[in-house]
Each structure stands twice: as C-alpha cells, then as structure tokens.
Image (cartoon, rainbow, N blue to C red):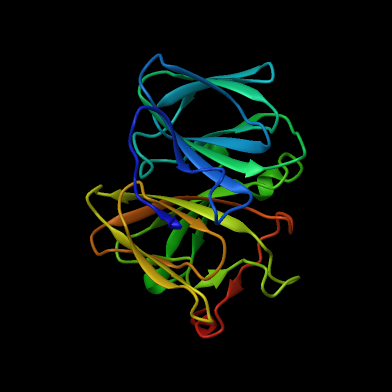
Amino acid sequence: MSRFVKAKEEQGYVDIIAEDNPYLKILALGKLFMAGGQQYSASTGAYETALVLLSGHMSVSCEGVTFDGLDSRDSVFVGKATTVYIPCRSSYTVIAEGKAVIAVCKVKAEEKHRPFVVRPGEVVVHQRGKDSWKREVHDIIADNADGRVHRMILGETFNEAGNWSSYPPHKHDGEFAPEEPNLEEVYHYQTNPSQGFGIQVHYTKDGSIDDAHIIRHCDSFAIDKGYHPVSAAGGYEVYYLWFMAGESGRKLNPYDDPDHKWLK
C-alpha cells in the first residue's frame, strides 16, 4: 500500500486514507459526496473529527447542537472554509442543502470536547515564504482551538502557479525531539484548473525514502516521516487541506532540512 492515494469520486461516504492505514497510527481521512437533501449519520468512535465543507451547503447536528445553513465556496479556490468539529465518542448527522463535498478528517483522541463551528470569518490567514516559495496558509483549527480539541491541528495551503510550499523542506517526525514534535500529517490536494498537476516530493536524509509523486486533482498523501515539500506546475494553482496530530502535543515547531535552511 502506498502513502500516496489517487483520487476517488463516488457517492456517499468514501474512505480515502482508512483507519487501518499501515503508515498512520492516529489519522484517517474520508470524503462525503452528497446530493441535495441527502442525509448521512455516523459515530466518531475513538476519533475527534472535523467536517470541512469543500463545496456546497450543509447542516450538522451533534450532541444536541445543530449548526444550520452552513455555506461554503463554489470551490476551495474561492473564499475560506466552513468547518464543524465533532468530538470523539459522538454521533452526528449531516444534511446536504444542495450538492455538497465534505472532507472527513479524523484524529484519535481520548479527551471529549464540545462540538463547534469555524466559519470563514474566523479562519486565520498567513502569508508565508517569499520568491518562488510564497504561499497562503489558512489556519482553521490551530491556536484558535487551544483547549477546545484534544490533538487536532487543521488548515489549508494555497500554492500559486509554479510556487513551492512546505519549503524550505521541513519535517516533524520527532527524530530530534524534544525540539522537533512528532506529528503525523495528511494532505488532500486540489488543482486549479482541475486538469492541472503538481509534484509532491518526499525524502529522508538516510535515503530510505527518496520519492516524487505527481499530484492530480483530489489525490491524497499520508505523511508519517520525512521531508515533504510541494510544488505547483506552471499555470496551475495547487491547494491542499492538511491536518496533523501526535503524542507530542499541539505545538508546531517543524525541523528544517539543514542543507536548505539558508533559504530562510
């Protein structure tokens, strides 16, 4: 089984990176493809879960709370995300108000918190990098969720055409703990226009991993270790939803590849 997962587009709920993925112990990813009026119910079990509205409209009920009329963008490249946090050991129901595509981001958790919604106006936007590695990062569940979630950290990154992100190359697999956190991560990509592509580089300094994958629209990637920079092809934007978690807490302090740290 590969860390890199090619796109799946079906109806209803689809496992993208399953809970028994051999590379990840804490994270899993699914997607919901729903038509107007459709309803989906599930239980989170051992996973705190974020429902990220990639496109469309939805309502979500959980733990006696209902979040109605949640609107999103026509695509991830237009505006900011709407996201509903569902705690572990909870049941929830999603109703699509029109066609909706929803990422189901799962993180193993023991602490049960209260459900909440992050609306587009609450997303924190950062401009990162410079030159050909300038990108825009949207924090959805990050510092703004301290004390409201157990392990989850979640956001979105937007690469302009031809630009790099996760760059200079960094990692967060705990090799140099305690300074470097030990965090698994999942990427879920989209391209604009959708026939576009990008490159996902993945390597370790000992050479045990030295790979490059062609990013196509709606592919995904499970990152358990190693450096993982992303490049958008000329003429095409690359987006990726990312979320991460680990036993080392929610502090982000990625370790830069010493060979390329001078770029900062």
